[in-house]
Image (cartoon, rainbow, N blue to C red; front, top):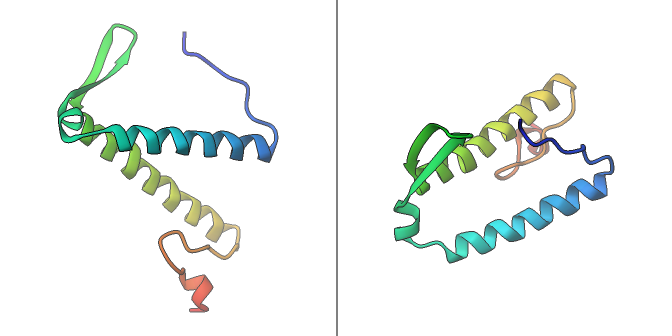
Length: 98
């Protein structure tokens, strides 16, 4: 049975957890070398192996690319709500008045 947790109710709690996870990730990345990134990473569901690939590929696919995907989704939601899209990777067209 998958582990479930209670949702964070307060914005402050969410931001605190996010900031703590950023610190953990930065520490892990700083300790990582090419040898570690070349080692095999395994995605499992219990004893069932779903996927095996080098850690670097898993980091890029499940970390970076997934984050970019969700930032793009956020932009779509903001546009649908007629909310100006903030710059995510530099100034946005909304911020530039275009």
